[in-house]
Length: 216
Image (cartoon, rainbow, N blue to C red; front, side, top):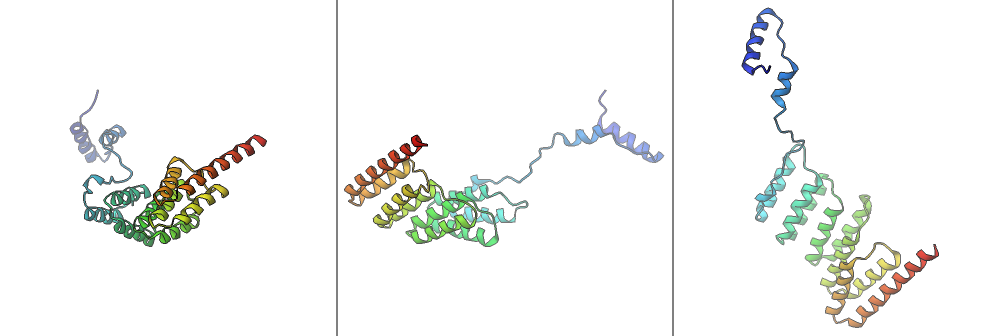
C-alpha cells in the first residue's frame, strides 16, 4: 500500500520526539524520480536574429557553468556567418582562442571561410598552420575553402597549383564540390584550356592510383 507524503511526515515528527527519526529510501526516490536531469544547461539559439543577439549569446555562454562544448560555439559562429557578419565571427573566434576555449576543425574552417570571404586569403592560410599545432589535419573542406578564396582574390594560378599539389601529394581526396570549384573558377577567369588540362590531370592521377592498387 502506498503511503502519502503527509503520512510519512507525521510519522517523522512522531519519531523525532522518540529520537528515532528516519525516512525510507522509497520516499527519497519518489521525491526525485520525476525531476528532469540535465548535465549541461541548454543554449537557446532561436533567440539569435541579429548580430547583437549573437554577441549577447556568446557572452552568456562564456559565463555559463559548466561552459558549453565547442559544438555550441561552432553553431553560434556558423549562424553569425550566415548573417554575413564575417568580421564579427572572426572577433568571436579570436576571443575564444584568447580565452583558451577549445576549438576544432569545424571552428578553424569557419575562420578560414570568413577570411576568404573578406578577401584576406593569406590570413586563411595562416589558420591552416594552426591545424597542425592543434593536432588536427586539414580536410577536403579546408582546402576547398582556400581554393575558393584564391579564386575570389583572382589568384587563379595559385589555385591551380594548390589543386595539383593536393592531387600529387595526396593531401586529401578531392570530392565533387572541389572539382566543380576548380573547373568553375578557371572557366570564369577565362582559363578554359587550363580547366580542360586539370580534368585530364585528374583523370591521369585517378588512373595511376587504380594501377597502384592493382599492383599491390
